[in-house]
Amino acid sequence: MISNTRLINADTTAFIKTLPDNSIDLIATDPPYYRVKSCGWDNQWKSEAEYLSWLDSLLVEFYRVLKPNGSLYMFCGSHLAPDTELLVRQRFDVLSHIIWAKPAGPWKRMNKESLRSYFPSTERIIFAGHYAGPLQPKVDGFAAKCGELKHNVFKPLIDYFRTARQSLGVSAKEINAATKTQMCSHWFSESQWQLPSEKQYQALQALFDRIAKERHQAGGLNRPHHELVREYRTLNREYLALCQEYRSLRRPFAVTAAVPYTDVWHYPPVAFYPGKHPCEKPAEMMEHIISASSRPGDVVADFFMGSGATIKAAIKLGRIGLGVELEEERFKQTEREIHPETTRPG
Image (cartoon, rainbow, N blue to C red):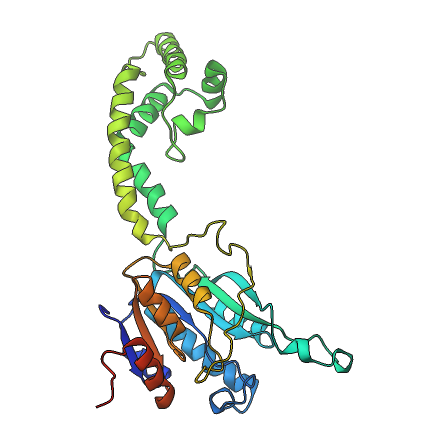
């Protein structure tokens, strides 16, 4: 159980194995892209295949530590974006392939006539959750749970209608004709069940009474409608209360017209300043990701912390941050920025 923000100076591939299953609510991370930057950490693999194999081993652990209703946002370069997405799809449900279209960058200084292909001015963000793919989902999910719950809660009323129909052998054609609707499947089955209106119920009562008399049978729809309505309201309150409890099973996601809600984002890159990390992500973008896909108190992890933009945003928004960074010098700088009160010299 991760209860406080933690910053770890370690190799992610080793450290992540120490984390318990289902311990992270949101992973928002920016792993090396492979030979996009001149830094040593981006050029440590001999080939694309070796890099992708390393990335896949990370995804195995991401799947393990991410909670059943958790989300993954993984940044990647445009060149290997298709390969990266395919790897993610093997273990997760890819919900969006987000394009971060930067409004400014080095391409403006390029000699356009010397280009032999289109200049890569974007970064990609693979947004994913768990799903029923080659790996089975960890839970059935919110919609399935609520459907099952509705059937169980409303079972007394559902059984009342179904038993009456079965005892008299009333056909769907007779029911729909008597009520001038196509609602038989909603009133007399478990799927999408609903209570008929008073007028519809009276038509059903008349039909069932007639058939019972013709067949010299007892039974039918004998309860008054107002009594059914009272029971329905009681059961519905119980259903809504239980549904609210199940809401925690649902993957958080919330956007509005005031924030990016499409899969193309236009955040400006972070301007240069002394000590800037070469891959630093805009604070506004990381805050948007965390706000959209987590709840206050959730654990937000960045396994390639770098400048700490993810962790800083998580703390600002009332989440618990887990940041892992391999480079010691970079780690100390980020740690000083996040926890200045505990990292003063002397």
